[in-house]
Image 1 (cartoon, rainbow, N blue to C red):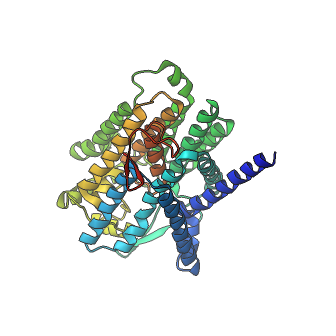
Image 2 (image 1 turned 90 degrees about the vertical axis):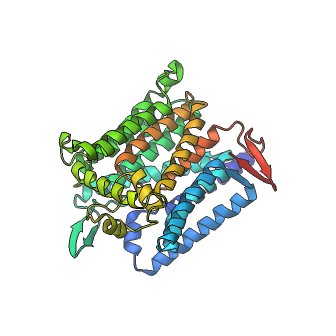
Image 3 (image 1 turned 30 degrees about the vertical axis):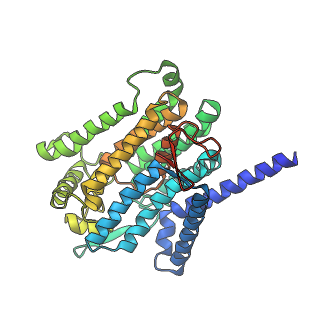
Length: 419
């Protein structure tokens, strides 16, 4: 009995530790807002350093390098090199991108006992959804001002919530669906009541209050796939494949981004249906400008830029980013960054394909489909998707644990390279 109590206390301590790590790495926007320009900003910077040092020390002790870590290092290393080449702020570029690499390292560290980290993610994302739902209803104009100045004129940005902003709410709901859905299905082959309740609450908030269609479509597609996971697991339909979903998203990208620019398809869409005050026509103009700029510097792009820098580059007040994940990568890292990211997606897809009808792989496939749909219209700065990538990668490796070396492991100077 004392031993069981000790084990339970250790697990609870680990969950609390991971909650602190998540709070630092996925810091609420409101906290960033109220600490801006104060000494608390330095405190959070020190906390961030301490979290990274902890992750690094555990990672060095484990002496294990995954293929996803290598891809993240190459991708964000390319962006940092591009920033240096273009005369940008390398320090700021490192500060804004190193967290993605450390998120992969965190999964490298915890892959042998992932449950405590997953429980922390579920709790944190539940808190996000509940608090931001209350804020969205209570503060129709946003929790705090989110204005910016461009060319001497003041503009209003997305509605602000506590943890996120208008479109970010649905993105974090999608992360909750992944972590909760994967954990429940892996543990008991069915999702719990909390999964349904939070999805319904979040979806209603998006539909009635936030009006963010892109995240509604992505979260609904993911929810349906997870709910049907038992049917998919038993029937194993051939059409259910990560590559099929990637093909659908590719068609979406070509139809919405490429053909809308060439053929002016924006007239087929009702204004304002794609979220906030930014219409489909607005996105079309941003995509046009982004593609034009990428064509001028196709290899390395322009390096890291602040939202003001992107607006100045694209010469558009409505463009804090390219409103497309792939185009944003093209702007800051050129075609080289896009290629590295596509290679990463293929590595993840290959890992899923090996066990595509297992419950976990079904949930990962659902997440990838939802995330890629959003990638056509949005650019997310959350680091959690790299956690999903790394976890999916390890799932594709047999016996990927410390005690039982995975079949794809290469040893070099005592380090395990799982590629």
